[in-house]
Image (cartoon, rainbow, N blue to C red; front, side, top):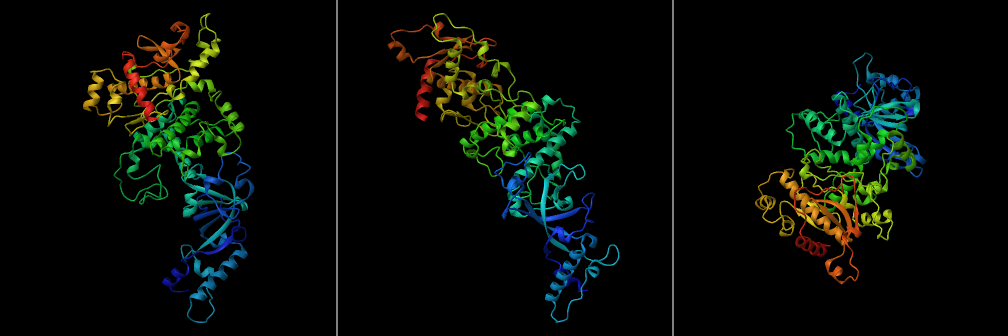
Length: 564
């Protein structure tokens, strides 16, 4: 046997590479605690590097994907725990390579007589173990924190004997191509852990994004003094592969919006992973609520991008890469028709029709739980705002009821039906239709002119005596400023509101006063208005606040046009 220092140098680099088919015997366990552990795993497909982001699909991979056309191979460093793991040929090859390396390290010309048995010892607990580069053809899907036998492990399967290996680390290139895969299953593990801690007592319809974020921040945040559930080894220098830190951590403040953004980045995948399995499965989140969250997330990514921020985006994805507003679950395998049927089977009619989408109001993702519940300071949105609730027009109306209704509603920009909000951690609202902004840290005279003169709202804003945007007076001012700005866009498209008790109750055609004076046939308000029953228009602008003045509307109208 070589001296200890020489032996360490001799075994420092792994041997190989070897094919698992030729090197490993059937003794290598595929179950139990002693399965092979792989380090520095690297994957290829058709001669090019590939990561788990591209190799793992929830359903059958698309026909044009690499993994549908070619097999995936993976390489890793495996420590041979016992010589019984080796085939007879594998034993001979490995011993020959060991002697060749030993011979190269010798200064004399004597032939090396080092054997594997000498290296490993003749009794339990003796000897030294060596490692090899192993090459396998991949089979089945990888499992990350989803195995019942290895709940915290990263498992990969080889085609030969369906061997299972525990991945302990990835090479840099494969890791960079697998960040979405790792994030997705970490989030899935967090969701399941939250529900288990709650013993699934929370009703399904209440298991929303707010439920997850609230529980993460209140229940699991304290665990992070010595452990991270959601973590990134690239940026956490003192965290191991299990998320355990070396020393107690001083926790930084995590904005609520950041946690929401983590879920938003993988929201569509989490939806697909929930609805894909055939048969019964315990629901982790409410599907209908999660579909809404997916749609809101797509819109908020664009809102953040408009002010130069990246929020709620998967790794390596830019907003311009996903211009569509529709959910695209086919990116995770199968076809759009497959996913539409899955959503229908799991949750009847989860997808809203185009007409209902026009009336569906986007809720405040960034501060849903912080929204002001005071009836006097919130909007009311209702899916009943539909053509069935529209009464027939007067006999003098030349258009049919349906055409008249759709004509008015279609003119109003869609974003005007959406509930405005400012994401957590920010103080600027940006209109989706133009460049108009409301910056609460730097309010302009243009912004303040939309408020009632000498009101308490104007006083609070001018003197900056507020602390949080969720304060009732600030919410009142915010909604009122946005309300009046949206009216500008509505009037730009020839639509106005009819007001009753400071609440918009009807839609009507609108003509600028200068053009109306020139009109040879002025119309009466009754012949132009399209009333909406139920709870009126269901865009109930702030009660108890005066309707916009003509002066403020004309002022804003000119301002907006200059900014476009």
